[in-house]
Image 1 (cartoon, one colour):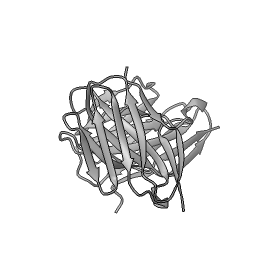
Image 2 (cartoon, helix red, strand yellow):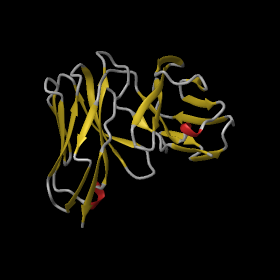
Image 3 (cartoon, chains in turn red, orange):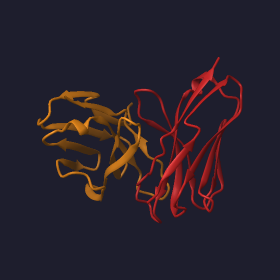
Image 4 (cartoon, one colour):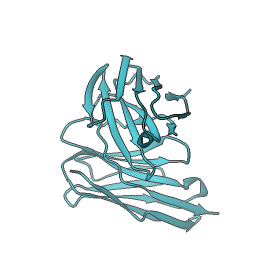
Length: 114
Length: 113
C-alpha cells in the first residue's frame, strides 16, 4: 500500500528565500508524480507533473525532482514570494498505467512573510 | 471560465438525508474523479469514470452512487447521510492521455449534523 509523507508539515520563511519541500513514498512503482498547491477554501492547482522516466521538471521559479528508486521527490521554490503561501501537496500516481489514482501526502503548509 | 465546477459550494444537512453534489467540466476531458478530503486534510480517491464508465471504486460505501450522464458531468449522490460523511468533496478531471495532470474543482464542504 502506497504511503506518502511530506516534510516539513509547516514552514514559515521570509520573502526572497529559496526553499525545498520534501516528499517520500513507500512504493516506487509509480506512473508519475504530481505536485499541487491548495489555497484555503479552494481546490488544487496542478504545478508540475514528472513522468516516471524523468528526473525533474521546471516551471518558472519551481523545480521538482524525482528519484523513483529511493522513493523521493523534492519541490524547490526559488526567490519565494508572499503569493506562494499555500499548502503544497505531493501525489504519486499508483500503478503502471494511467489510472489517475493519486495518493496524496498531508501536505506542507508554507507561509512566506513579506 | 471555470474549468471544473461543482455545486453547491456548501451543504449542511441532517443525518439520514439524501443529497447530491453536481460536477461539470468544460475542458473536453475524458476522465472524471471524486476525491474526499477529511478533517485531517487527507485527500483520497473515491471514484473514477472514463467516458461515462466506472473504472475505479475505492471501497466506498454503496450509500455513495456516482452518476455520469455524459463525459462532461459526474454527479455524486449520497443516501442516508452519516456524521462521518462530513468532509470536503472534490471533483477533478483529466485528459485520458498518458501523463496528463488532474484539474480540480473548488470543492463542496459537506456538514452532516
